[in-house]
Amino acid sequence: MSRWEVCVCLKLLLSLHVVAQLRADGRQQWPVPYRRFDQRPPADSYCEALYPFCPTGDRDGRFPSIRDSDVVSVYRLQTPVWEFKYGDVLGKFHIMHDAIGFSSLETGANYTMEWYELFQLGNCTFPHLRPEMFAPFWCNQGAACFFEGIDDLHWSQNGTLEKIGEVTGSQFNAMARWVQDDNETGIYYETWTVRSDPGPNATVWFESYDCSQFVHRTYRKLTELGAKLSSRSQTNYTKIYLYSGEPSYLGNDSAIFGQPALKNLAMDIRQFYHTFRPHQSIFDLAFSLLEAYKEVVLDKSFYLYYNFEYWHLPMKHPYVQITYEEVPLP
Image (cartoon, rainbow, N blue to C red):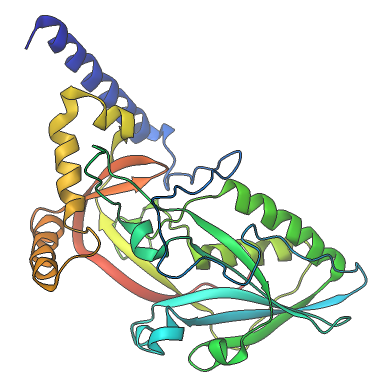
């Protein structure tokens, strides 16, 4: 390695160390704030969904206009993930999907609003490793979908369909404008919530950004607009946790995968995600599960992609946990 290459390597490593120190010394807020964008980019044609996103609704989350004098009922909706295909199977593990329903008193029309992955959960949680690209390729956009009708059986048979309040047409229209902005600026799905431990005083390193978080944000917005929301039952939601010590900032795609000095780190990240690649055979999947156990539990290592940047998580017991915990209405 030439003297120039050594200097470049040292400067690059030093800059990464400074960034990490700045983030660890208090300038970095925990949890890391979710990054918002000026506008939503078009989805890459490489990304494909097994089930099309928002097939009968408005993919941009646009709403019909409702008269300001109307009275709109608000419904809490919850059902097992992929209930339409597997019934209550995932519900037994408390893996639930959340949405909000609306019903206009004046017109009698019903509507459903939900926020979810454009290309299914697996694509939002782990990337593709494309032969022609060194950096992992992510299909991790999520968006709001608004469509007419509420499928009563879908929500009530194995989940929840409960009226939790009423809003005026004016409040509903104000919420609709807020949803448009929220949907345009919050563009990617994040599966994991990362905490220091399961205890009540744990530090949250990263928050998830998923269907239930969208529902919570909407409830808070409706409350800000003057709505009174209440439930007769406990309002529980699915959370998928990773547990780790303080995360280390690594950099974005160009910093890691575009620098020869960080080739070993880049290869480590690629190898980590290779374990979770899609479309594996039964044999490959069994081997990958053993590899994942080694990486996460034995080696106590996890690479997280958040805000289009990579972080290293020094994993801790109990490592991964799915909970179904109460989040009260605002």
